[in-house]
Amino acid sequence: MSFGLLKHFKDLKKSESVASAPVHFEHLILGHDLGAILKLMELRRNHPHESIRLISARPLNRQALVENYQYGPSLLRSKDAVEGIYKRYFNAEILPQTKSASFYKEGKFHDFGGRAKSMDLLSGEDFFIQNAYKLEISSLFSEEDWEHLDQILIEHQQIRIFESIEKTSSQDLLMKSEWKLTFKDFSQLTCENLYVGFSPRHFLSLLTHKENLTPELIDLCSSVTTQAAISLTWVLNKEIYSEDRTLLIPQSMTHEWGHFILEFDTFNEQTKTQACHALFLLHEEEPQTEDLGSKIKLLKRVLDRVFPHIENHMVREFIRFDEEMFVSDIKDHLMEQVGFDYPTLKFLGHSSAVPSNHSNEKFLSRTLLSH
Image (cartoon, rainbow, N blue to C red; front, side):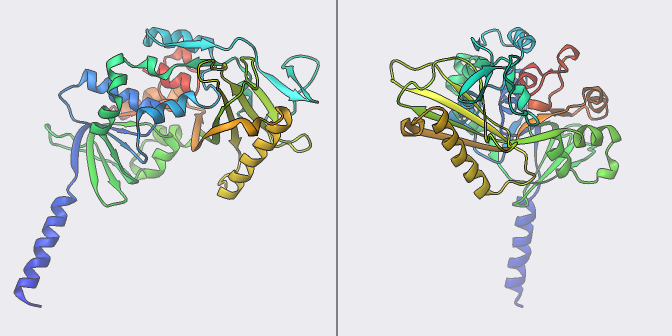
């Protein structure tokens, strides 16, 4: 090998090592949900001179936020939570449903608690028989922040696929590298403060050197329950259903397959359209793509029987699949100890720490009530 070629490889190796050197931030937010975005806005307000990045596996923008939180049946179903949310978000616009949830049986809808009995509710479906509250997502932001949200996200977001996360210990007083993140492209980031917006169970799966972690952190992360689901919204060119309530429609009258959960928005007189929202929970460990497609087709067939010809009036369709759409069973009693042991680690979203008087809250309520 010639000297020139050898020097070339040495220079190349040196440049690669420089390129792969970790970039440091004072605050790193992981995730793509509302909790991650709200944390970004909070850190920008409270730490304007510190470095902040939001790391997610998918692009984030204002429209995606609206589709994820205003499309689909409401995930806010607690009067106590709403009262607490107003104390944190003074300008929040939250409207309660006017009627209680009902279920479909023998050709008509029935109220829960009456003579008629619904088919068995599968795990997680009982949450949706509570009265819902509709949230205007923009009301959680100032007018200026909402107007410029896309630009703020462009400036602060990086799209990366996670490989591993390591708890580190830095002696550098100026650049405190408490956490090191490695990605599929071999790039690395370090940070002082880490905010985790996906489930603690997924976070635990990415952590290396688990033997060095405290039992409380492992217990907190491994004990949570995650639930996959598909949420759909259709824009209809006709008013199909006028009542403001949540509807539970059996997927089958002969098999215990669970329910399709449905809500209709008020008919828009200006656009002559109505939005129909549907959701169904997935109980398979690893649902296959073809199974999901079959389930969506079944949903449309069932809806067409309950609301004749509804499929003919669907002019637009939005579909959202999330393997961790619902995270629950948070052990709040461990949160305080984990916070003491790992003061630079915070969980966001459905896994947030909340005031003790709201420890029974879950999902969107917990996101908005977090400390």
